[in-house]
Length: 116
Image (cartoon, rainbow, N blue to C red):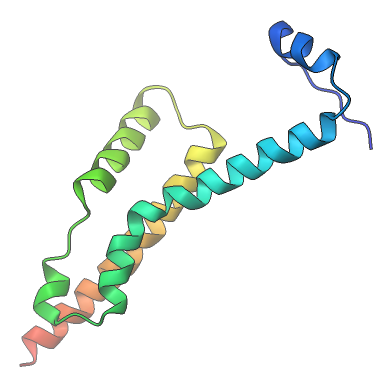
C-alpha cells in the first residue's frame, strides 16, 4: 500500500536516506500505543482499590491520586483552551469511563450504608 502525507522538511531529510520507513512507522505506532496504555497506569491505583473489595466507607472516601488529578486538570484546561489531540481524547474517554465506574461503586456503597 502506498500512503502520501505531509511532514516537516527536517523530518523528511532524516527519512530520505533511510530504507526502513515501514519499520520506523511501526516503532512509532508501538510507542504511541504503549503511551496510551501507560496513561491508564495512573488510574490503576483506583482500580486496584476497587478490586480489593473495600468497605463501603472506603469506597465513599476514594479519590484520585494527586498525579491523576493533575493529569485530569491538565486535560480539562487544554480542552477548554486549545482542544485535545486524538490521543488525548482517547485518554480522556478512558478517564471518563473510570469516573463512571467509581460513581457506580460509590452509589452502591452509599446504598449499603443507608440500609445498615
